[in-house]
Image (cartoon, rainbow, N blue to C red; front, side):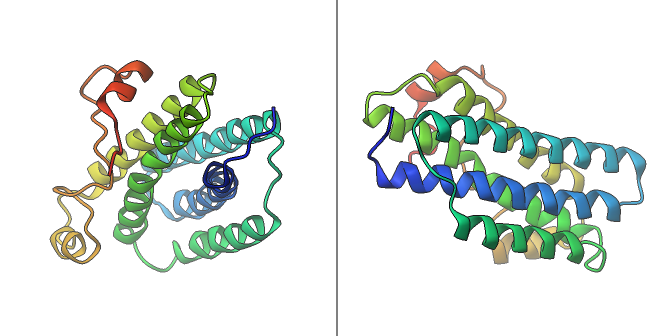
Length: 189
C-alpha cells in the first residue's frame, strides 16, 4: 500500500541510510578499542544497526518508498569518516558521540509510529517500538562506558547530552510495551 505522507517517507529514507552510517561508524569504533569485552559489545550494536536497516527497508518496500540515493551517498560518507576518525580521537569521544546520536535516534522510531498512526496504519508498531527501545539500550550502554570520565561534565554542558540530559524521555525501567509507549506518548517534544 503506497503512502502519501512526506514527513514519514523522509523519516523512513533517512533512517534507512543513517543506520548504515551508524553501522560503519561502529566498525571503526570497535576496531579502535583495546578492551575485548568493549569490542564485542560495540560489534553487537553494529549488528543491531544492520538489522534495523533491514527492518526499515522491509517497511519501505511494503509502502513503495524508494531508497534515497542522496541519503545513501551522504550517510555512507559520514559513516566511513566517523569510522576512520575513531582511530585518532581516543576512547571517550567515540563513546560520547555514539551515545548522543543513539539518544536522538530513539525518538525517530516513535515518531514514525505516530506518523503511521496518523494515516491509520498500526501494523508496524511492534518493530518500530522494538527498534526505538534498542536505540535507548545503545544510548544507556554508551553512557555507562563514560559516565565517570573527567571530560563528561564539560561535554555534557557543551552538547546537552550525558548523565543528566537525554534527547528522549524513554524509560527502560518500565514495561517495554508498544501500548504503554503509545499511552505514555514517548518523544512528544
